[in-house]
Length: 434
Image (cartoon, rainbow, N blue to C red; front, side):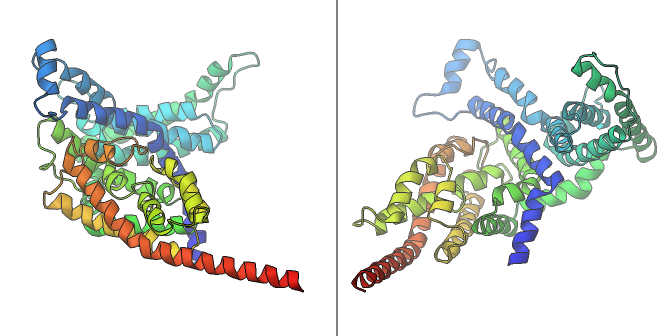
């Protein structure tokens, strides 16, 4: 187990995985904005009130929806281009070389590789999530080559007194020229000899099979299990595995969103397992579904007002409502607490199974929106399912199941604490008598 912790710690601190994770975190606000724009364009009716009809009456049929469509084009539809910049920027900063130059060169390289449409435009099909794997691979390779060229002094050094921004631009000139020349040569060879783009090759060989695997129940269960096993040992599970799962699950969400934007029902979109699937139906209150743990503590520990479990709950619950649960994970604690190991891991895996089948059989719409991870339950369940009350019902059902599972373990933990407290008091009294 110690070896497992060491390996997981090294993976979590690995430079390239950290850069991928931070790159996705950096563009997350844009992803959320694009997602909410689509949701707004397709907002469900509230009784007799239909937002679509109101805005159509004011701005004309469909005109107001062009705003949301434009926002989508500049955010989710260009996620590949955005991530090619942000990963390169973060990786270069970790090497203490010019992150801005590395990011710009990486984005330019990405554009060179993007197939051109018949009217000489860039294909949105590959600017978006279908190009994510190329964006990740390219940004890492470009940044590594940029770093090597800069460290090899293949740069133009400007004299003292030249503004810093100008000096950095000339430092990146020769490395950038070499990198773009190599990328352009590669693109030309692909076009002449393979008569296809690297995007299509990678998508068919790597990305499409992995996304198909990621959209299965076994893969979702493994993700939930590993995330919480790492958390139990005090390692940030979400950060460690985030660099691996986000390139898989964001394209699946993007596909749902795109079809929902085109008028398909949230019940009929194809992908069940997405990032909002975990955030909304499994990680309620944060990893371990700790909102259910708070409820279980309040049910079990009713009389002892000063009991540490209740005190921690009072302090941690307000943050937990917004899915921030470090206070309870380290304050109860859950980390390295044998009494909490089984429910902390069992609850998310079980909720993953319940939620998967609820969406698969059509009891609940599939996820068609990305909301901020701090969105409280109930509201998040309504929004990610395209404005369906069924998403709220699934969240409430999952919370009830999770609470039932947590209750016996809270009882064991509270009883153990009470016994230890009595033993401590007895020892202190005996010491005084002596």
